Image (cartoon, rainbow, N blue to C red; front, side, top):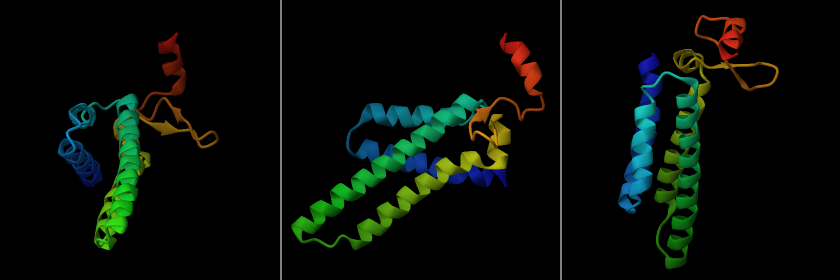
Length: 137
């Protein structure tokens, strides 16, 4: 089941990389490749970087959707199918980013969310927070 959680994440990153490659944004393609490599690093910071990259991807897809829709409307071209496709891609990016909040991915990446503050806290890897605080000092 956990492997299934990675499918939309990898798919979203592949689509984002292809989008940047198509427009010739080589540094952005390299950043997407780095994000894919980060998926194998089971650390909270790696998960949050990938999650931030997916949110950036969501913004990029929405920006692209708006620009292309306006261009097609002004040119008198059909735009509905493109709107649906890019909307689905943006939704996939959003879902991918939210998957890092699921129990299985939080466990894999050692993330624990404090129920009161909603912020990441160390732990969830079998160690108590007192031992983690001792390690930090």
